[in-house]
Length: 338
Image (cartoon, rainbow, N blue to C red; front, side, top):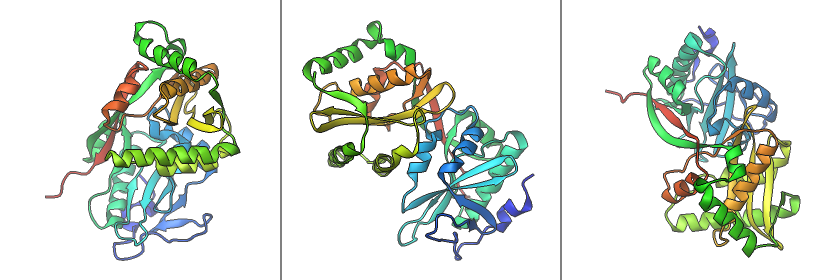
């Protein structure tokens, strides 16, 4: 059972301040009497340990860290062995402000997991003033456990898991298209250089991000990653290698691609970001292969390359690397009110 101070009865009702706001990142904030802290870099070991054997892409701590933005904030709270991670959306005019659980309860199992999940959903409901609180990222095993408290798993996407040894070897017919585009890139752009990202690359990387963003918007494709990508470009040096590798692909003085990836578990890695100039044939395959080969040489054996966002072109691109399996990621929703 969770301590009384962490139960839903302590949450501030709607109509009052949901959060004790402060511009001071050191300030402890509260949802009623529920003490929560803004996510900070030093929370990384605690969160990584609490994640256990989870393999979902969103568990990668740099993603969580860079996801913070003026309109949203990651908050954490602890109750005994349980660790809770919340997303506080805070629009500029406070209309639509809400609390959700970013993950199910971490670091716990059995009754502590189910009781903690039930209590925190109720807490978020009371803060939001409705019954819309949800869990944003959950693996299927967590989703099945959440059914015990009446939450409904909603399929989000399948995440691509690659065997790094297979990708590094690129052997056989299965990798023929990847090999073809990899070596075509080498033939057509022999002066292209793959190297660690430096401070002098930032302007070129940001220009590439904005150009790709304009192209996606013009095609009617939702743009979901610009905020955390720009944050990662600015602050990636806070994470040492191999936790986060940042690499660029340059042709002369022009950045034609960049990527970030790093260790997520003892044997597993996360492909965090990849951006390439679409006019340069083979750049995406070349950069993806080089990064995965580097991770394999560091001792990692598999990598989660996230999902395809429902985009057929991205799905075809990722299928080229022959995923050995796909990991289902869900949202956990409350049943509709009657």
